[in-house]
Image (cartoon, rainbow, N blue to C red; front, top):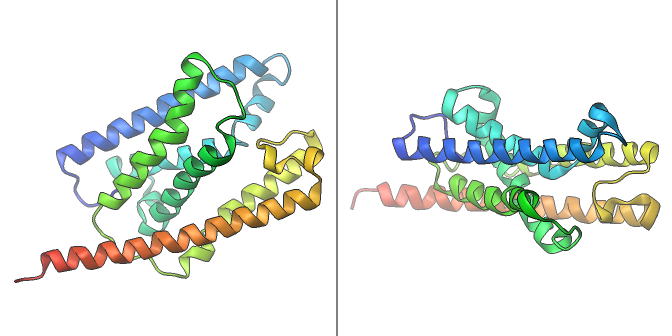
Length: 219
C-alpha cells in the first residue's frame, strides 16, 4: 500500500490494476450470490449475507486504500496506521482461508477464479505493495491493540446475526454446530492470531525503515 506522496507511473498503473481486480472480483461474487439467493433471501438479506464475510470486507478495504492512493479520497485510508491495519486484515484473510477453509466449498468456473483472486492474489499483492511502499517507520506498538477493534466488532456482528438467523459465515464460528463455548474459544484464538500478526507487521515496518535509512546514509 502506498503513501499519498506522488506516485510513479508504474506504481499508479499497479494500483489501478489491483483496484480493478478487486472491484471486478467483488462485483462478480456479489452478483453470483444474489442470483443464488434471490428466491430464498431477496436482495436485502442477500446483501447482508454478502457483507457478513470477512473476505469481502477486507477486500473492500484494500479497494478503498487503492482509491485513496490514486485520488486522495477517502483520506482516512491514506493514513499509515490504516494502511497497516488493512494489510494485516487482508494478509490474514489469505492465511486463514488457505489453512482452514480452502477445502470447505467446491467451486467451479468464474466463481473459482474470483475466489482465488480474493483469497490469494489480492492478499499477496497487497502485502508486497505495502512492503515496497515508502514511509515505513511510523507505526507504533500501541496500534496493534487498536487494530483488534475491527475483528472484535466483526465477530460480535457474526454472533448476533447468527443467533437471529441461524446462519454463520464460517464453520469455526458456527454456534449451532459447535456450541457457544467452542466458538468463543475459536474467537479468542483468532484474536490472538491478529494480535501476534499485528506485532509482526509493526516489527517489519521498523526493520524496513532502518534498512531504508541505512541505504540512504552517506558512505
